[in-house]
Length: 360
Ligand code: PLP
Image (cartoon, rainbow, N blue to C red):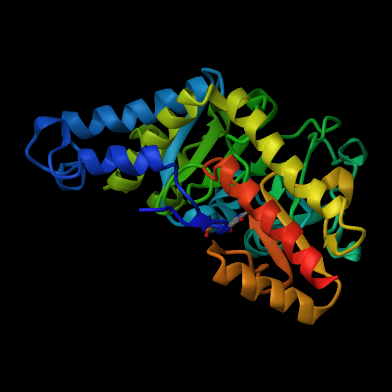
C-alpha cells in the first residue's frame, strides 16, 4: 500500500518503520502472549519500555543529570495550567513572549492563576516574525520566561533563544522538539505534546530541572510535578501505548543519526519548499519573514483567495493531505515534521511548480 503524502499539523505522520515495528509485536509483545496495551503498567515488561523511552530521550537530547523527564497527559494545553500552578508563586510575575496563538493561550491560563506580563510580542505584524531574542529582558525576580519555540500556526521558529535572562526559561517545543539540537541546560523546563515529532497523541513530555520541582501540599495531586517526578510518571496509569510508540520513534531518530542526522534532513526539506516559494516571482507568498521561517511548518498563500482554494482542491485530488492552513489564519501550510520523508516533500515541490506553470 502506498503511504499518503501526509502534511498534517498534528496528529501528524509517523515513521513507517515505527508502525511496522508496532504491528509486528501487536499481538504478542516480548513473548508475553499479550499486546503491549494489555500489560499492567506495574509489570517489568512495561516498565522496561517506559524507562527505555526516558533513556533514549536523555541520550538523544543529552539531557543533564539534574533534569527529570515526565510523561504526562492532558496535552501541551494542560501544561499551560500546570506550569504556573507549580512555578508561579503569588508574589512573583511570569513573563510570556507572544509569538502566536499558542503562546497567547499559555498566557491566558497563567493569568488565571497569578501575575503575568508580556515580555515581547509580534502580534502587531500578525505573528509573522520572531522578536530579536537578544532584546528580551525580564526582571531578575520574575518567576520565569515562557516562549513557544515553534509557532505551528504561523510557521515561525526561534533560531536562537534569549540569553540575557537569568530566570528559568520555559519552552513549549510541541512542534519542533527533536528537530534540531538544543542545549537543554539553558532551559528550566521544556514541554511538548507528542503528536507532531514524538509519537501519537496521548502523552506529553516534560523535561524539568530538578530544583524547580517543589512539594506543595496545596496543589491538586495530579497537577503537581512533584507527584509525577517522585513516582517515575507511574503515580497513576500512564498512556502505555503512546509511551511505547514514543520509545519506537526515539529508536527511529537514533537510527537516522540522532538529532543531528534528523536536523540535516529537515534543513534540506525546508530549503526545497522555501526555494519554490522564493523562486515563484510572488506566485506563492510565504507568511513568515525570512529570518523567522520555521523548518517544521511552511505557511504560504497564493496571489488570490480563489487561487489558494483551487490549489488546495487540486492538491487534495493529487493525494496531498493536510495542506490547509489553520482555521484561524487560512492559506496553506505544509507541516514537514521529522517523520515526513524527503521524497514526499519533493513530490509537493513538483506539484507546486506544475500548478504555477498551469495557472500564472
Ligand atoms: N503548543 C503548540 C506549539 C501547538 O502546536 C499545539 C497544538 O497544535 C499545542 C500547544 C496544543 O497541544 P495539545 O493539543 O497537545 O494540547
